[in-house]
Length: 349
Ligand code: PMP
Image (tube, helix red, strand yellow):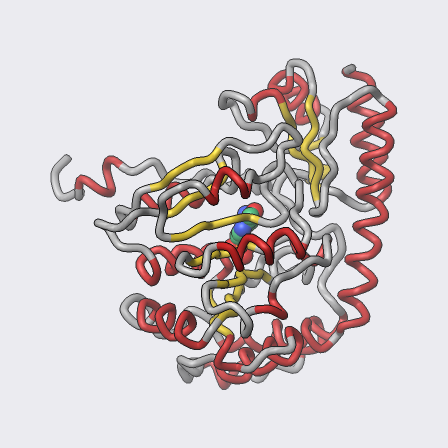
């Protein structure tokens, strides 16, 4: 193709879940069922638009300081980006070489990892999941790689690995970097963030999109040893000096300051997840134990069920790919939304 690079014409990009214009019971992209904290609304209302004439701070210092306070680390342990997708993307050139041993991931995990690897020409080794659909750490240990990228809880299965097991793993591979993608961790409560100062080979990546109900503002962060953080910063500064805009920064600081709202909404979702999971199991469906804000539900003729649910106004996520095609991924919504899902789904079983 004229003018187009081989990379741009050949790469298979990540496909994000639909963001439809019509009204759906929307349970397809793992957004939070609750709106952001009232403090976020106040921060937006009182935001001085005149300040937008200036570039934001390239070091995002106020936001990094607030994240550091919330996570119990120092600002030099924190890197921020335009969504955790960007933080994860920058991690590839920051930590993995083109001619290196590559990154080891779970066989079924967040599909963006492989796209980043292709984009940055990093080789990927995939390790089959355990039978219970958890990430197989023992299998990963045996892999000859430069580092690991582990979604914990995993996506799209929802299965989490407890802190003790993860820490044992991190300890056992001191010469390899372990990146823990904790996008859904607040719904599990087993974060490795408090351990980044103990383990120089540990990088924890988190997001405002899920537990803080801020998918629309685009902010994610990494926590790790200052050497890891400065590698990410060097790569960021080769790409975009200001990935986090001033409004985004004000919004995320406000969200972090409302610890009580965060705790309450996370708790409500976890409670609803357990109810929804129990109801789906009562309908005879296989649902692995989820530690996230979504459920991975095995269902006969999943593709057809997905289409029929959509026709009835309920949107869930379906992948037309081997293994995954036996499942639907369903975001935990508000109680009334989950009830609509259950009612419509039960009609189809
Ligand atoms: N990691 C995982 C496992 C995810 O599912 C997602 C959301 N699709 C992300 C990272 C990225 O989230 P965001 O860019 O919104 O922070």
